Amino acid sequence: MGQKLLILTEAGDNIGLGHLIRCDAIANECRRQNITCLLFVHFQGKIIDFQGQYESKNWHSDIDFLMQYSQDCPILIDSYLVSDEVLLTIRGYFNQVIMLDDYNRVNYDADTIINPNVYFDKINYSNQKAKCYGGSEYVILRDEIIQKGKSKLVTATNQIAVMLGGSISEELLTKVCNSLLSFNEYNIVIICPSPIQREKFSKQYHLFKWQGLQNAIEICKLYLESYLVISGCGQTLHELAYLGKNVIGIQVGDDQILNQEYYLESGFLKTKLVWNDPEIEEKIEVEIKHILARTDSEFLARNFIKGNGVKNILKLIFDSTNSITWRFAEWDDSSLFFKWANDPDVRNNSFSHDKIKWEDHAIWFKENLDHGTIFLLFYAENKPIGQLRIKFEGGKGIIDYSVDASYRGRGYGTVILSTVSKIKEKFQIKFPIIGVVKQANVNSIKAFVNSGFAFSKRELIDFQMCEIFEI
Image (tube, rainbow, N blue to C red; front, top):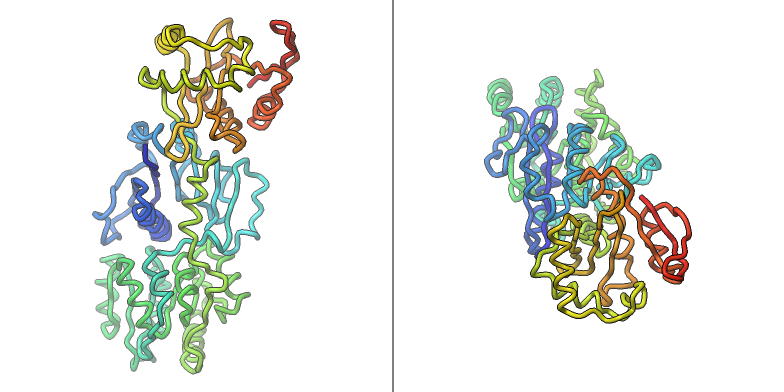
């Protein structure tokens, strides 16, 4: 069972392309690492030139198709538009949910939150129940940018590029174009994803070169051949900082405020520009003149953009204790469960220490499969690492679990037991689920406590004092 990752994101009108660029970079790195990756994109509007390159799904409203993947893989979501209702449904489908977040948008019902931005430390995530990660070590860069950044950069001196994102307001585009009119000795290249806007503006500003959406190789070539890039302050700014380009950064959305502030403080950006500033035309023109007069053509910013963000994100997702997947046990698993059942430590912690015979085990195993017991097999590192059984009797579910001997001491018991609350929600189990642990089994007691079970009572069972936990 190889590693898999499902990604949901969005792009288009009033959304932009930052989410898609980030997720595409993660998907490509998955393929390089032989991780099966499925990327589904909700496209809004018709501005995307290369929308046919991706699997288009309106997953914001039609999510039933996700059920076929629910037990196979973790899911990563990069979205501003997804509703709480859809997130709750996805949570019920998947064992591991990871959210990419930029500014603590909502209280996410997720296992992990990753903020792939340099300003992560300025965001207070104390309201979140999920584990939260972020900072420069998680900044997402496309591999083409990283590879070019490792080589010697050759910068032309007669080209200015404009890249303001996938959803550009005509008001801002007009002001930027006007500010460039006096620099007619330069080759002006403007990336405008909207075909309608390109047609309209190319007639009015016919001296400029107008281009649609570019792939990663084309964008990287444009970066390198431009002396100056006028950019928004979102995802593109990270790539330009890594390459050390001369940049004028315009904040075009509230979600870009902290990014712009960080790069201003670092010295990479020299002037604070906001898209709705009534004097922005004049300020852009002044800043262009300042940059063209500079003798230092590159500001090397790689000290705070490390270029390993995508690899770190995948490592986090597929970390041994963070990437457990499960499936329902089948008859073909009976030999594996027989081996685990006769493990010396398992027998010692059981109420009966006698070794189990195969004939008895086979009958017991089949009865559990046939009579409504929830019987699950857990995987990590592509290998089976443990089991969980919930048997229903007397108005409650009774837990039995174990971890393979070679995987003990690594927190897997806690992770396996942590799935019980999700299983209870998934199968809409209304009555309590309990675990009975011998008082001497300290490790198992810790696992129950750390996985969210509440201590219920102590009870003498078969002449042995036990701790009973409930969820």
